[in-house]
Length: 303
Image (cartoon, rainbow, N blue to C red; front, side, top):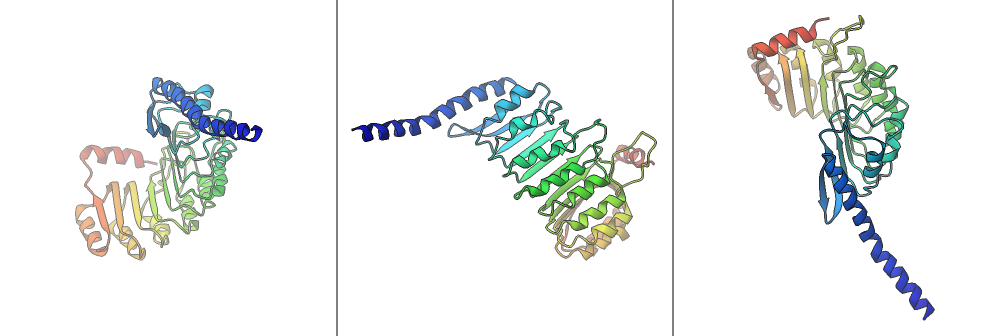
């Protein structure tokens, strides 16, 4: 009888745990929704949380999010300045998280190593990370090489420079890398050749500098000395540059290339037609710049 009672108690506990967790999740969902989150659930289990505005989030809110153990996708947009070296550990309980997108977080290079606690991450996006933080250059991204499933990484709008690009070169499992509006130079593009699994690349123009330092373009015709060596590429997006047909034609050297997107690229229409003939197996997406776009691009490319 005593053994039977023990078994009954154990079965009761087993059946109670999920309901307890779901009840806790429900309370968290209510609070997060009040803060503006869009929450997706499946059979009462929270799988996605999307914030358009994170300006009200701090230690307590990140601790709540960190309790959603089955969360797969987390998006923290809209000035998420409350996510720092001190608060990021509140999210390390998200061991099932696969996709994390952030905007405006204030994490140091050393703090970036905290993301390696999320072992199931497949996709990471950093928009405007650590902007305005003295000493940040992105070298801490090298820690992400220990994430076994990480395949997609975006870094944009940040003082990430060539040291950051050298760090990216160490994340050799990357298949999709996207970067624009950073402090990298043309020399930093060389790091892309060290990514043996790279299938998709989005390469945009450098961020303007106003501190008196070099403001040379990071994307121009000379960049194709590097791009033509990325033999594994299947998709390429280039953004905010003046490019010649001669340079673009060098993409014939990429045997797997299937898609080329030219965003805000200044190139004569006649030359684009020449490129289409030179790359018959590649789908090319381009449209001529408007007068306003031409003016903006001219200003942006000034040294």
